Image (cartoon, rainbow, N blue to C red; front, side, top):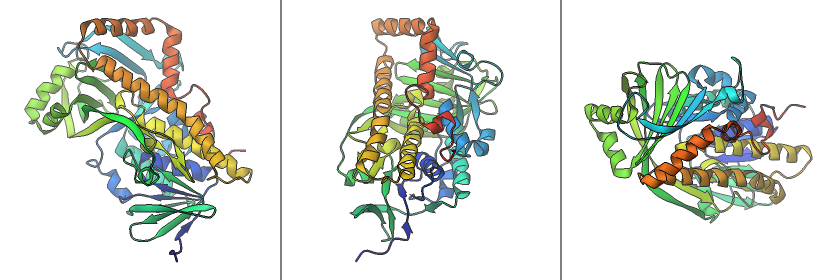
Amino acid sequence: MANKAFFDGDVVIAGGGLAGMTLALALEQAGLSVAVVDALEMSDQLAPEFDGRASALAYTSWRMFEALGVADHLREHAQRIEHILVCDGRPYGGTRPGGPGPHTLHFDREEISPGPDGEPLGWMAENRHSRQALVKALKAKPGITIVAPARADHYEHRTGGIDLVLEDGRRLSGKLLVACDGKFSRVRKQAKIRTAGWRYGQKGLVATVRHAEPHNGTAYEYFLPSGPFAILPLPDNRSSLVWTEPDRVADALKEASDDVFQEELEARFGDFLGDVRPEGPRFTYPLSLSMSERFLDDRIAFVGDAARGIHPLAGQGFNLGIRDAAALAEVCGEARRVGLDIGAPTTLQRYADWRRFDSATLALGTDVFNRLFSNDFEPLRQIRGLGLSLVDKIPPARRFFMRQAGGETGDPPRLLKGERLDAA
């Protein structure tokens, strides 16, 4: 006879990372009881050495954070993005970022949200601060049970529900299990759901730098033959670098002496923000594309990297997880209100249909852009440069891409519009 469940509620979430915590808050607001299981103590995820990355939050993601009560805890650590400059750069230094060529695409938030009180294109925040804000919001919600540290072992179906069994034998029961356990999802593996994808043979080297001149809320994404090089604004004259290189080069840069790293940094960064110095440790993350063949199984939904993982060049990875959370919470909340089973196939199919196109479009788009720009083939350089210049000269095209990146096209869920799910 199975052990009695120590949690018996609506939803069990396997994985308490950024997407899992966001989903828990959204589901709780929709009126559901939720348990979040994670292998690490929540406090361990707040240490600076745990995760050196910073994430770009699209303006619709920020609206959702405001609706969930997360933004109030994060605002002082977040930086508004006012401009984005995309250019086909070459690593010869100079007064412009990395010596970009003449073809530059400029996105200005004034085009879609004018005025001093206009909405930015997005916000940049270090992942450790985002986690801290999410943990604070979670702990204020009595309808959310946090189970950490604890490792999920497997799940078992039962009549009208599903149980997540932990390695220590404890059991959590729900009507729905949500896998937020990353690219190498254990839940997805047990469900025997295949993924399509590949490694890029690249790693993203992530570091924080401090510079003498203000960035004025501008994010730079420029392309070198080895891969994208992003300079993303943080508060207090700092920026987060996402520096893409082949695996061996990225590993060498991570382990390089401070003097060697400084020399390589200056060669790519340029002097457009004055003197630039690294601040804090360096991290590397392997880059790959993975797409799950489906986003649901029997009483199981897949969210965030468990559903798909994409190249970080567009900064959309976390935003896709947030959009998943917004859609799933809305679908489950509506099912609950009309007395339907939140784990039923018809309920979960609504979620999967809602999220499939956006996921596939961004996964394909980032893959194509990375392959198109991560080379030094002269005829291709001319074509892509002309493409950037052409889009830059067509205001409706610029506005479309800004709204697409912001998550505002199509049929966005209510939370992405800033609407609370418990509102009348």
